[in-house]
Image (cartoon, rainbow, N blue to C red; front, side, top):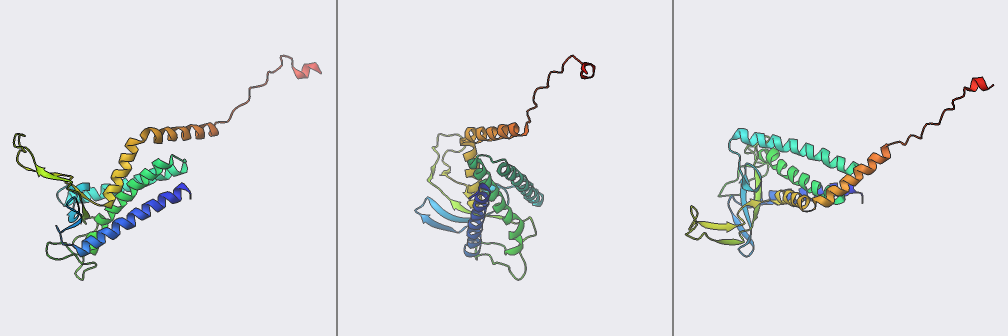
Length: 232
């Protein structure tokens, strides 16, 4: 299988898995509902994120619209970058990492772009409806991202002697995220960990392509001092 087909397959698998889970959560869980998957440390907890990844928020309609437009620009830029890597036969690992990042970016953008149009508003009493009769809860590019993975591995309180937070609840890991967020995080982390290998191979590919483009010019022939016309 070519690296281009591998990239497309990775993106499709992540997108399909991400959207299937989000739609299921949106239509089967109420807002804030928590389902234990493994003990107390792996839960599905339904929240909607109007802002950035891992529950971070940019308040206001303008902030939400700006973030959606930024996501779209980022997707286009990453897509062109991925295409150039494939065409230049870059390191397979680097192509896979960028594919993971692109898939995650597209997955969350789908929520922002379309969920406000196709779902009713989620609430604490009943799951949202798919294609409700009265229309969706918001307009294009103003939807909310569905998050559900919650890993409160450590749950306790800060010691009282710690300034400002002493006695307050401490939870690790507190952020709630989705498959798209995970895909972006894995791609970025892998690039950081293996950057020397990835970009060393990329540099070698660029050098090889540069050598192929250079045409060696044979040395000029030594012109005789004698005039051929005079020798006749």
